[in-house]
Image (cartoon, rainbow, N blue to C red; front, side):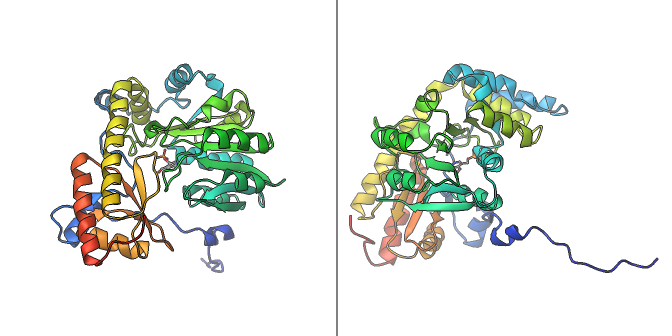
Length: 374
Ligand SMILES: Cc1ncc(COP(=O)(O)O)c(C=O)c1O
């Protein structure tokens, strides 16, 4: 049989601009490679603790039902969240991680050449979803490691579809104040979505914090993203949710996969919500450990941003990629921010944090200096 003329496969041109997510090496693999006795992973803002005991038990029981598809509407979880958050069920949607919901929001709102406004540096997924939609990521530099809401409001144009407010911000851990937020909300037109990403809100202890949920019933353009990946210790299960105007929930329902939330994640999240005492204890422990690390960073003269989350953004006094590699050789994996001197370190267990301090001391000795001023 005669073969057809060979023509190369072509993927969409916009993908040439997008780098695939680079999964890091497995910790055990890296540990062997570096011939370390211990290597701690403080690079992904995960919880150092597993899912709560109740969530684990419920998920174990659910394993025997995995021959069935999960509830495609995650209805039990939606109904529980609706009661807890005092928001109608029609305003709640569950995602395969909040990451998926951020993408789906962009997918249902952004046309090519539209604009998505965001602070920078902030969560890396926002510019990525803009690119995927052939929209423009308008990145407004942080001021003193915090969102510059004034500049972000000023950046809104007729083409803007979404303004992301990452609160607390990943990677700096900083929050926006109540007064700033109220002013900002009034400046942004009501047909532009203000998306509050609250992946870390459970860790916040500042009185000046305002959740988008407090504003939700008064403004028609508020979206709030939350996740079970952080304080609930369920990052590996992939589940988060959004509270959003019902037109947006309806639009996202049209484009999401029918069974995007697996059964174990649904069950685990549902029962995690019954563990408030345990979750409050986790937040208190995080605060205690964060205070310890911040004290040590001050002692070591390492500059850092004031974090309200479960991670700290610290200036290592030299190129972050080089610094992170050196720290890795000493036994800790941190996240480096290219073209800066900053690394992000997740707060771990008490033992891991004490080990981190020892590693920082060694790092400073090896570098012969205290890295930066305070
Ligand atoms: C600010 C922020 N939003 C959203 C996410 C996504 O979380 P997930 O998809 O695990 O719910 C992360 C994860 O690191 C994050 O830092």
